[in-house]
Length: 107
Image (tube, rainbow, N blue to C red; front, side, top):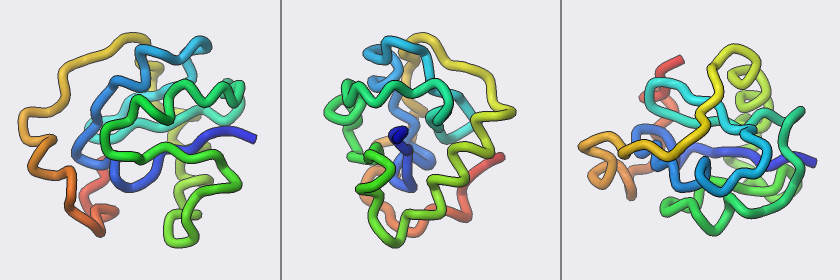
């Protein structure tokens, strides 16, 4: 069972989670991160590091976010690894509490 990055990460893309990952399973897109399910070792270290609570164990992903399980696997296959923490986008804080951000995802 892998961990999954869900909708709250879109446009926020805080990378605190990347810094604690022992296996470098995060992949980076323009405005979103995903977890490579083949690399994730289920260590849970990333979960408390996410300031927008976007990371869940696969079997705990909220029902309305279940499509992000397949999306993480799909995008992880093509997006490059992110190996160290970076600055969040300048407007990240303004996107923190915004819902329904799927249309903002840049593939």
